[in-house]
Length: 200
Ligand code: GAR
Image (tube, rainbow, N blue to C red; front, side, top):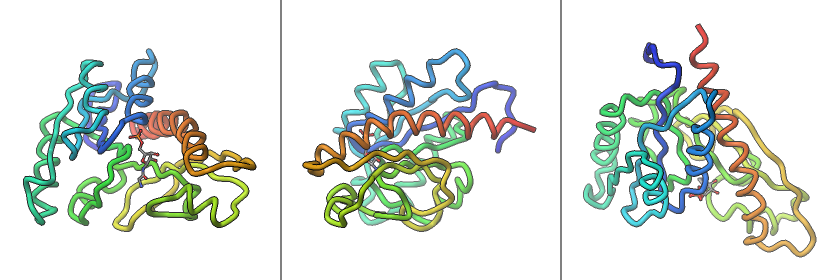
């Protein structure tokens, strides 16, 4: 972790879509005793709704469109890295960032990059988690915040939240219940992580 006199850890939130988790994180950053501040939001998708939400709240919202880089994943990530460095970011929070990262960016942020996944990992990594939880007959679902490693939806688990699967649930209903839990879990875990990272 970079040494800093700032009492708040400068965080970047990476998104690809609606940004509801990002919004929850921004809300938490507004608390007087928050351990972090969001210094930049980055989206790889220019149309991502979260960009507008971030800009409305006065947070720099930057598009780094992967499509400009063809198949060169690392070139896209170098452009992201340049934005992260320009904003003095110390911790990266992936919040619905739906592009696989190369080992290069993962290594650059080892131990300092968090992700949220809409399942109780290690159960149901990957996509369509809610439909898969229902098809498997699971009694409960939930969400996981974990450190990012060079493996998809894996890495040390920092926090989990459980929700019941109710009779009559479809993927949409379950997704909404899990999403509500995400909005509580992610800001809390991020805050604790940043607080701990400041301890000598
Ligand atoms: C969230 O449910 C998040 O857990 C999921 O995408 C959604 C983004 O919603 N992430 C993944 O599936 C990553 N594997 P949001 O844009 O409204 O925060």
